[in-house]
Every structure is written in C-alpha cells, then in structure tokens.
Length: 247
Image (cartoon, rainbow, N blue to C red; front, side, top):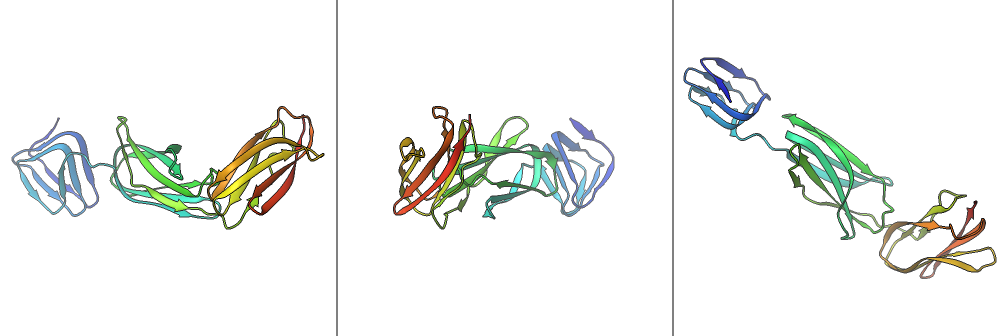
C-alpha cells in the first residue's frame, strides 16, 4: 500500500502513475494532474486538493488496441496493429483461419509489458499457399498472468487470376518434395505422377478444390531414382513438369 502525506505533486502531460495497489493522497496533499496525465491504481483516494483536467482511474489501464488491419501486399499479407496503452502485456498470438477452417497460431509477438505511449506491431504472412482464398486473422492478447482476450477478426481474400503449376522444390530431391499450384475458381482437380514410360505411379490429388493457392508434399520413398512427370489437370487446363528423384 502506498500512502503519501503532506506533499505537493505536479504530474506533467503524458505521464502515467500506475500501481497495482491502493494510492491514498491524504489531507494536506496538493495534486495537479495536467492534460494527458493519468493516476491509476486498484483504488485511488484523494482527501487533499485535486486540480487539473487529467484522468483519475480506479483500476490499472488495460491493453488498449486502437488499430488492427490486414492488407494484401506482393506475395504476402501485411498485418499491422497498434496499442495506445499496455498493462502487464506479455504479447500477442497471431492466429489465422483459412476458408472457415480451424484457428491456428502462426507466430507469437512479444508485448511491451507496461506502457502509456502508443506502440506499433506488424507481421508479414508469406504463406499464401496454405490452401484456400479467404484468410482471416485475430490477435490473442496474453497478460503476464496468463489471462487473455481476442481482438476483432480481419479478413483478406486472395484469389489467383489464373491456373498455375509451379516447379517442385527441392529438385532434385530425396525422398520428399513440395509441389505448388493455384486455382482461380473451384475446380475438380487431378495431380498424378508418371514415369518416363507414361505409366502412372502415384495419385496425389483427385478431388474438388476451392479457389486458392496450395502446396502438397510428394514422398517418393517407394520409387526408384530417376526422372518423373507430374501432371495437373483442372477442367480443360493441363500442365506437366519434370521432377528428379536421386537416392
């Protein structure tokens, strides 16, 4: 408990007196709280003289989130958020959901603990081949005691403008490689693997997929070293590329 007796205080603009306790300003105390200044504690009692137009509050300031946006950049989604004040802010879990799927944490961004000045945060999500076209984000703000709150949800739609099949990577590979592809609309999709004789050796995809950008992992541990073909067929669009397995 903090007790101040028979003292004179001047709190200048943009200062914050913040305590997880009881603050008592007894008879004989003169307090001037100027514009922009705050005195915050679990309980504030003023028995002396109080002047000025600053703010008194019973209870510490929360983490005040004033802005949260998501915008589409070049091959990434740019997230930006801003706090005006922070109290016991451990940090933010950035969570993402694609096409009404499950929410998943993609990164943790540490907070500033306690602050009475604006703080800017940002994160660039470069994983646009996670499947689907509707990307939703929210912040899970976590206090140092483990309590948390969620922000509002922001959304960005990423729809490819054409069918595309990318070269697998790594290439050559052993035994796994990644294949990326994009669909401008919902499509019945097939992706098959063939040997150089034209024989089908693996079926990677045979289903209807919504618009969006995707990646799949091809594990060739059951195949022999050599050059193979992978073919994407989506409606009338067909594209074939080579991949090389070296064991």
